[in-house]
Amino acid sequence: MDGFSTTLLVAGVLAILVLFAGTKVVPQGFNFTIERFGRYTRTLKPGLNLIVPFIDRVGRKLNMMEQVLDVPHQEVITRDNATVTANGVTFYQVLDAAAAAYEVSQLEHAVLNLTMTNIRTVMGSMDLDELLSNRDEINHRLLHVVDAAVSPWGLKITRIEIKDIDPPKDLVEAMGRQMKAEREKRAAILEAEGRRQSAILQAEGAKQAQVLEAEGRREAAFRDAEARERSAEAEAKATTMVSEAIAKGDVQAINYFVANNYIQALESIAKSPNQKLLMLPVEASNVIGALGGIAEIAKETFGGDAPKRSSSRPPSSGQ
Image (tube, rainbow, N blue to C red):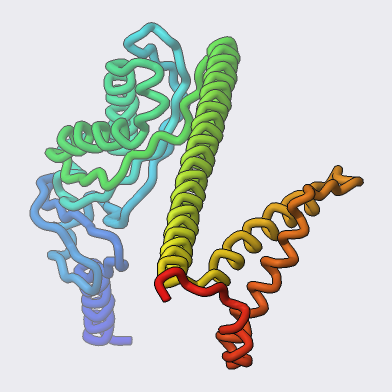
């Protein structure tokens, strides 16, 4: 190989080395920072990028995807001096690769310590009962405080979740007894309320029954009075008709009136349930005559023998 060929080969190798050194491929989800003589110059985005060979170099490789950081257990003293143990998780994302690379050292360690400190601050400002029942509020306050603190580092805290809050064993036992007593109290109140409602319903039912019974008696009394009134009217009308007939000289009307009263009296006596022996007055024979009068009236009414009726009527004093 002559000298020219050797120079050409060396130039080709140098060209390949320069091309390789000046080409950087950044994977998706990452950003690379470029430093020139130790000073940050720019950030490479995902894809194929060109830099000045042997002058520029990759400084930091930042993961731009959302990441999770476990927060270990730590003791927290609440406002009412109860000691609890709490842990959680923190989700964060790098938004500015340069700030995350050069504004803070040991990024994850800084985020972890900042989160733990604020957990003690936020939870320590609350009572134990408030701490156990307002976990969403704790997460919200932690997110607001920690996100504001890491903003200069080019980070975004997307979520902070408290996983476990463990009170001391003796405190858990006391809480269990308190919960049991509270449930027993609520059960006793519900039973008393049930008995009260039952008594009220029974009283209302009895009241309604008495009202209905009184209305029934009033309706029955009204109908009885109406029946007696109708009966009296009918009796008065019948008496008037008989009186008019007597005034006209119809003796059979008198016989009918007397006989009808006799029959009703005998019917009442005969219907008595304890009546074993029926005693008739001597005048009972007059009933037969009254029955004869009734027969005469019936014949007149239904077209009987008129001349025969006239012969049986006593002569009128006016004739």
